[in-house]
Image (cartoon, rainbow, N blue to C red; front, side):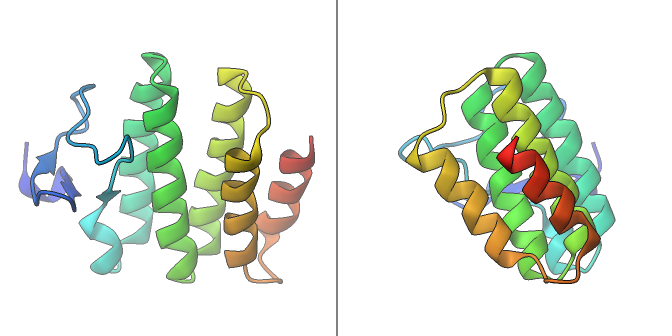
Amino acid sequence: MPKSRRLSCACRGSTYRPSSLSLPCSSDKEIHLTPPRITEGQYYEAQQQTRVVAARYVKSASWDAAIDILFNVSQSLLKAGQGGSGGDLSLFLVDVYRQAELKVDSGSKGKLLALLRLFDSDEPTRKKFIGEMIG
């Protein structure tokens, strides 16, 4: 796979190939993945790579891994001012919570509220995210 299509693992500097379902690394059960595309300004590509990886985690019922990658990359995109891409992944995160049938707890609420705070007030995806989050 070409190097530009890989996700970097910040904790060890290794790379993660989206075609693999195994976790690349974890530190206290947290995945530290950040697509290099975000730092390169290729936000849409980062969003699409993350969708592919998260979908594979969902398909294998690796809920924690899907939640971690969606939260981390959504957060990075929203911080970069990419409300559309970050919002799309945030909505995907809410969908993963539903599919996993996880009980609402302070951790899941905290992640969703952290993402909500990062949205620009005029971002169109924000309203939909709030509606899905409440639902």
